[in-house]
Every structure is written in structure tokens, then in C-alpha cells.
Image (tube, rainbow, N blue to C red):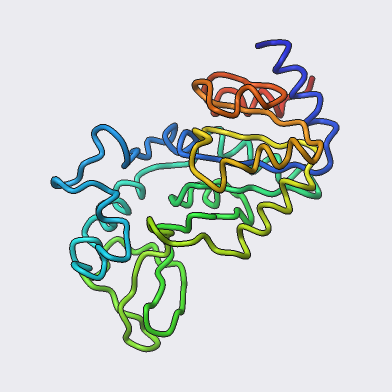
Length: 242
């Protein structure tokens, strides 16, 4: 890995346009629980059965209880060295785009100015009546929070199963992948579409693609450098002087 690390560090130091795609592995290093997969049950409910428009329509109180529990857990988490390194990289570059699949808001807390939260944010609430959406970090929301403007029912501002990603955010992510000189793909399994295709898009457009992950992924054979390990350990090294 030392030679690969040096190659990646050198290319990053020379780049003017950089994009980064972050997945759940980055948040896991801050202690954010993984809610899907083994051990992901909450009160005998699978997240896949709660994070849908249909579930919210049937029992909004149940769905909100789950999201309130998640907000409470994540409120105790803090940005880790990977979040901080990405915020520092943004400060160094004229053109940097951070694309995240995570909904915990830790990139913003670390100082990232405008992360593309393509799956939304737990800390944003959207009105089903007037469509108003705003940040609300209170942990004592009522069981069924209501819009202050129109009185409509509020829902979490996240993308649920069966819903489309925000078109404008996704378009900006594609544009960043196509324009960047270096793309970092960090802590993502590379199986959730359409985000999983961003690395291939960047590679086809001529970018140098660096993967940082605990284990190999479907993208590993296609990237320029794969660095295995914790993002919080590797990203600060990438930013260190050669």
C-alpha cells in the first residue's frame, strides 16, 4: 500500500478539480449505527419496512418513532478524522464536490460547506402539504410534527425506498464526476445505484480514481488505486505533504 498511497497523494496534490463520494463506512467510524443488514431490527421492524412512503401512510407515528430514535442516537456522534480531512481538502481547492450517501449531517458539522446529500438528511423536515423543507435539529419533536406555515404533516427529509433521488442534486453529482481530475470513493460498498456508477463515470472521463474502503468492492478492479483501511486513518495521510 505505501506505493499506492504515494501515487494517490501525488495525484491529489496536483489536482485542481476533485470529487469525493462517501458511503456508510465513513459514518460508521463515528459510531453511526448501520441500520440495514444483520442486527438491523428495531422493535421487530426491518428498516426496509419502515423507510417507505407506504409505511408512513399506514402508521406515521411508528415511522416517526423510528426516526426520532435514530436522530437521538446520531446526535451523540461527532465527525471523525475522515470528515475533517474532507473539509480541509475543500478549503484547499477551488473546485471540490462532496457527494454523500449518508443522512447524518456529520460532513456539515465537520465544516464541509455544501455537501450533496443525495439521500437527504435526517435533520431536514419536509411538509406533505406545502412542500416546505427546512433543517430542524430538535430532539423533542412531537409524535406527529406539523408544518408551522400550513399545519401539514411533516416527514423526514430523506429518500425512502421506492422514491427517486433529487434530480438537481444527482445532476450536479454526475457533472462533478465527469469534470474532476481525481475522484475519491470512500467507505461505500459500490452496490447502491445510481451512486455506485459515479466512479465508473469519472474513470471514463479520464479521472484518477482512488478507492478507500475496509475491503474490496465491485469497483476495486476498475479504480486506479485501492487503499484498504479506515478512512479516518488514510485520508489524513493523503492530505499530508509528500
